[in-house]
Amino acid sequence: MTEPADMILPLLREMRAENAALHEQTRAVLAALDKRLGGVEDAQKSFRQALTADTLMSRLVTGEFEERLDALEKKVRELESQK
Image 1: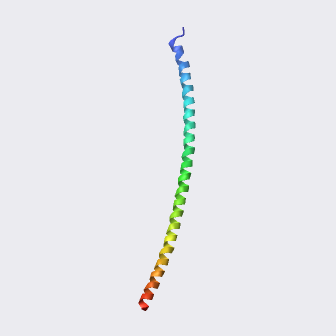
Image 2: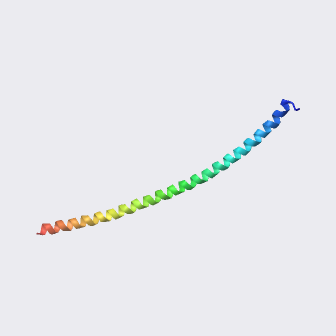
Image 3: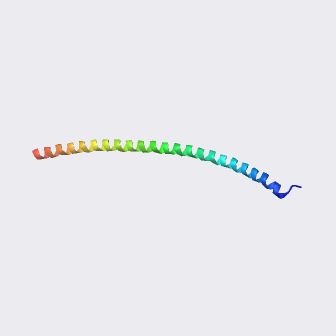
């Protein structure tokens, strides 16, 4: 039978090897999560840009609409003042 002191070093080496394998798995999972997070951030950035563009377009359209209304109101006032 082996002495307990002789069993400690092999057990520690085995534990170290298992820990190293688990650390590699953890690193792989973290790398995959970082990649997914990068994709989500890119999609969010694209969405924000599209939303900004849509907001600007709606402001332009609204601004043009308001300008047309102002012009029509001015014409109506002119016509009313002529009567």
